Image 1 (cartoon, helix red, strand yellow):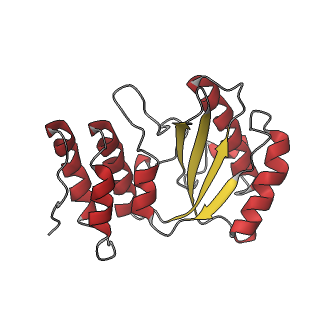
Image 2: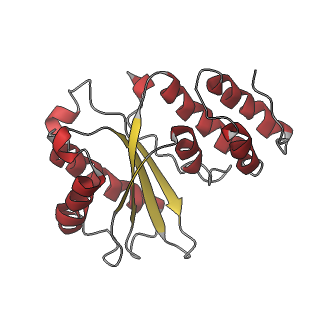
Length: 205
């Protein structure tokens, strides 16, 4: 039975947190990890909990995340619509270069990998960065070094909207629940970081 040692701040957030608790009942967390997460969740909005419960259901139904890729957009990409448009280009290039799908195949292949795009507003005014969570890629790309070479090689040439002064960061995911929490932390009644249009959800299938 999951208990909640850290009180959730508002009744609206508490109602949404019930969905998170229901999903967590079916996921395995290391001892003490729930308490650590709940400490950070005290500041989460109802919208953040709603997105998190949606993502945790993906884990519950078998999604296994392996890497998080983070990149910054150029100062010229100051509008959310611009960022999502350029992120679509990033997605198409990635599916072709890493998974071997062309654009026609992407709409037809039922087993395209689950992908989770989150566009965050940076601390610098008017700037954005994007987090992308991916499962295990094909063997030739299945390492931090291989993905870093690909993203900081071809991608930085092919996608002009990237910040030229910052590299694309690739890290392994050891804590999927914590990572899902991380990419929705900015959610509010006026902002949704999770990109439902670009992301590929397992449960959509």
